Structure formats: structure tokens, C-alpha cells
Length: 228
Image 1 (spheres, helix red, strand yellow):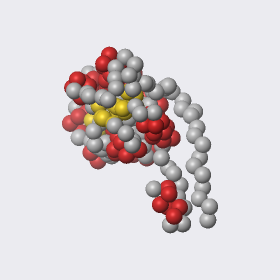
Image 2 (tube, one colour):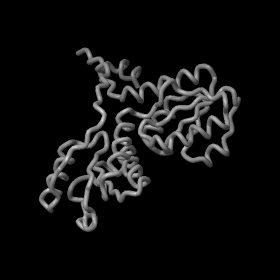
Image 3 (cartoon, one colour):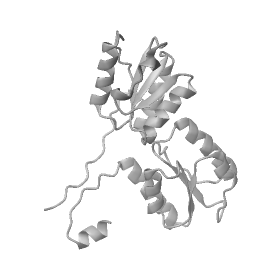
């Protein structure tokens, strides 16, 4: 894409998430040394499709334990894995442990590929689930990290619903809920969260309290601006 743009005299800004770019580089490095690549992620997800697109060698997607049982690789000592950045930590760890059992010499990333913001939100939801009867997750239906937040709450035994905006709230959900929690996917606009909180106050929920969480201080180098 970059070479074609240059040939046409076009300028562009690479807005790829730096954490996803890191996975792309790792895939290229593993390809260079002839490793089979295993991607732990959801088949058909745009991020996983993009990672596959950066691979030039053998690559397979792992979504379930059953996928691992049927794995065939060229050389069991030359296998490496990466993970989709928006996975549930719980689900990813289970699959990675199974991969390590099957391939004891598997090459692992130096640090987890899962986005720190995703991890922080999942941890916050686990803590929030101890205090509420219902959790509303503001986020798109096709947002992986938003769906994982809903799943984390449900796995904690809490009723949870994923909503695009305040208009999707069913008042019946609130009938037996004394404490209601609100969270949002990493890319959900803050205004949507504020509208949900304001609506809850209108229908009788009082005493809004913001739960303390991890302060995110990570900064990334800005992409180079195009030269006109």
C-alpha cells in the first residue's frame, strides 16, 4: 500500500494502532526465520484478517481449544504465536496454556499482545461486578473489546447488556436492579456514556459514583505527517 501510494505521488498518515503494528512486525520477523504462525483470536475479526494479511508464510487462527487439537505444523520446534489485542485475558490465557502444552518450545511475545486499555477495562469490570446488580456496556455490537466487557460481567454472575446508546436501554432491565454499573468500550465516545448516566438519574437512580481505576499514562509517538 505504501509503495503504491508513493508511486502515485500520494501522501498519507499511518493511523494503525501502535500495539497492532507491533504484532505486524512480529509476524514479519517470524516469517523471515521460517516459523509457522498461530494467531489467537476471533476468525473473521478485522484485526485478525489484517494480521493474516501481513503474513507471508504459514499462518493459522486459533479461536477454540478444538482448533488446537487439530493443529498441524511444519516443525513443532519452529512455531510462534501472537494474539488479537482485544481478547478477554481469561480466554487468551486458557488458549495460550494449551498451545504451550502442545508446543513446549513455542515462541511467545516478550509481553502480552492484549491492549493495556482492554486489560484495564476488564479488570475494572471484574471489580465493578462485585458491587452492582446490572452492568450496561456502551459500545458497538461489532466491537470486540466491548463484547469482552459484557462477557466478563456475565462470567462474574452479573446481568449485562451491550448498548450502542441510551435509546437501547430496556427499562425492564432496571426492575430488580438496586445498583447499576456503566462502562464503555475503549473507542466509545464519552458523550454516549454521559447520556446513559443522565438518563439513569432521570428515571430515579441517585448517588452516581465514579469508580477509581488504573490511570493510563502510556503515550505513543505521533505518526509522521505527510510532506506536501
